[in-house]
Image (cartoon, rainbow, N blue to C red; front, side, top):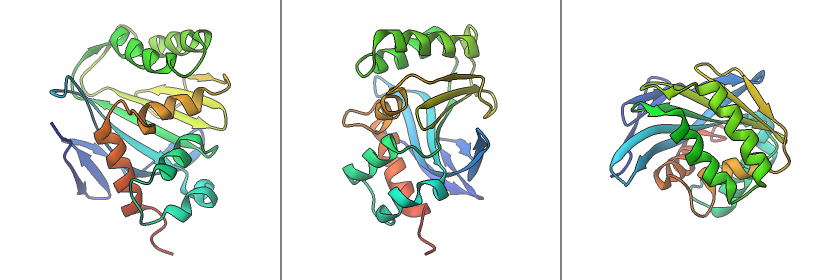
Length: 199
């Protein structure tokens, strides 16, 4: 099952979930690139996810990719860049917080030490409570080595400063084996369509 996205107003709709053209987290205004849907067993829609980046702060490393989609070097630059960037998740269905935390922690466990994974899991569960409701919003922002997590609104409610965590977290979505191929593709295509084209 593929992801459907469409332009709407000043943002985009991904499988019926609207994402605004920008958001502000950590005091940094960030612009929408694109995104897609995370499915389970290629059938059940779990959440839609979109990437936002500080286009000013990222211009030096990303502007050379303007108008180009799906380049491996683009995804690497997005994942490893020290500029502010946020993955914004909105849920299609209610899911236990434990299931969300374990799925992301399992992906992180392939990339960072176990102690870092444990800190991430604890922080996320504290924000989510027992259940991630249908329509719930989660925000994961990186700037430098700091990963900030917010629930409901783009406000940092927990921050991890473990080395390598930001690169690892974004690699889950932008790496060679992404958790959602549709989201990775949507981010690449959206980047090419939206950022740095005016100049």
